[in-house]
Length: 84
Image (tube, rainbow, N blue to C red; front, side, top):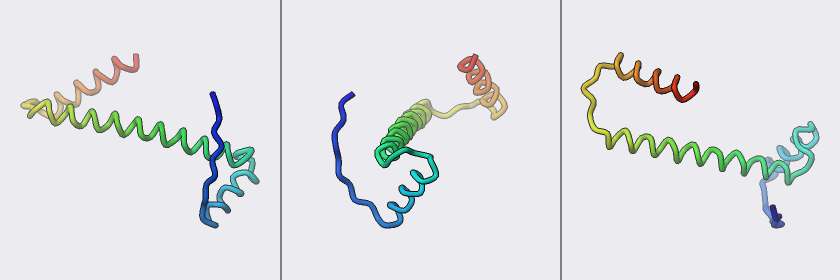
């Protein structure tokens, strides 16, 4: 994977936090911190996209005439089958 060099500006408070992360050994250098933060954001964005899609599917599925216990049981069965 190729690397691209970037120059960024941060506040004094952010710079202090970055420095503390390196001093405590959580990261080896500033680049590791930013790459980790970007990976986390990419993952979060994917989760949000999946959640939005699920909400849209739910809205488009219409109104259910099932009782809450039936819906809950179906959800539990679906969860068990996906994690089996």
